[in-house]
Length: 117
Image 1 (cartoon, rainbow, N blue to C red):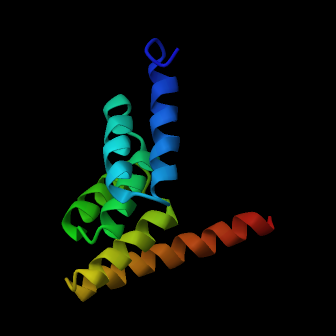
Image 2: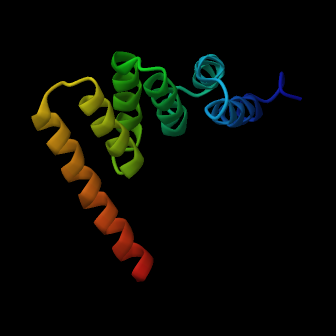
């Protein structure tokens, strides 16, 4: 069934990749890379890959993956949060950290308003 249905394969690899985030980040990177081979425009795939690289302390690859996730879903607060963490850990441009946090807080506030309505 997986061989015949690309969407099913993508979903399988995505879920497996997120599972591996809890136990083995290197396996997570491998599996999420396969998921992204099925669907390059998946923000969830890119976020997962960015998180796996972040947990492995590979901040350059993490930043690249998270920036790609941001291309496909710029309104996701989780992306902005991990970008800010990544920039803090890699001790890079503090102005970019502030920009990420501004976006994060702006989106979190909007999300809270949407929940109340």
